[in-house]
Amino acid sequence: VAKWVGDRFNRGIYDLHIIELKHIPFLEQSPEKKMILLQARDVMQRDVVTLNLVESVSNLTEVLAGSNHHAFPVLYPGTRRVAGMLSQSILRRILEEGEEAQLFVANQEPTPSKRIPWKSMLSSKPFKCQTPAELREYVADHMDKLVDLGPYVNRNNLFVLKYTSAWNCYTLFRQLGMRHLAVLGRDGSLVGIITRKDLILAEDEEVLLPKSPQIDLRFCKIMPAGT
Image (cartoon, rainbow, N blue to C red; front, side):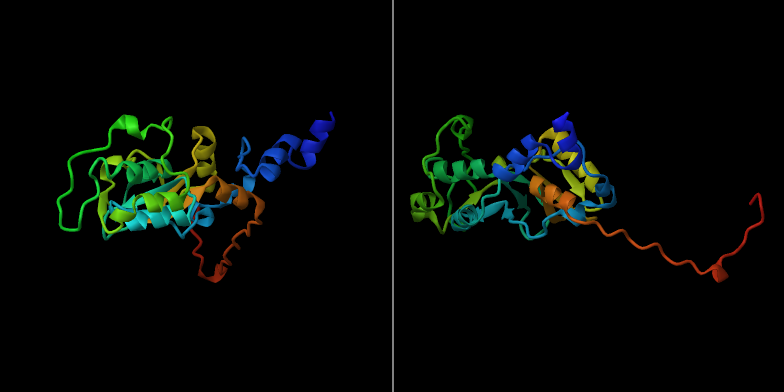
């Protein structure tokens, strides 16, 4: 009974332990009702760290050193169109195994046809480098080289339009166990990304209801009944 009473006025003690003490982005079973009024563009992060299909080794190491995101949207060169998502773990494997697989090429060299074996990409295999500094030192001789990320990009990720209801986004995260969700504009270009943390912050923020427009009855035409 005490637990039911406590849950009536605030989060449960187990949820508080997970969210506030462990800092784990835990989503409740159902979103707050006010999220019906929000769209994906209201809760997404607009400053997104992205990669190109063909990237330099130096830029890849800088991305890993400057952010701890679980995955990164990969764009077609010169556009904002999304080719797919690349997880941080796969990116680290590419840099660690790239030299042996001869993936690093100079600017004018053709793209190599050889690929990293699937067994070398498994999560059960320990990483060679534990920190971004170690990884940067590991590939120091190839900083000016390029690498094709296309064969390793996950092209089956879900995407939503920026007009999608935040309620539906919350449901996708909750039911599918997602960690990130890319947001696209009307033309299919990347405009933002949503994480669990963004949804939790959206639940805690106050939502301002849009004001109803004032209608001037002088310009309203009265139609006969039955029309």
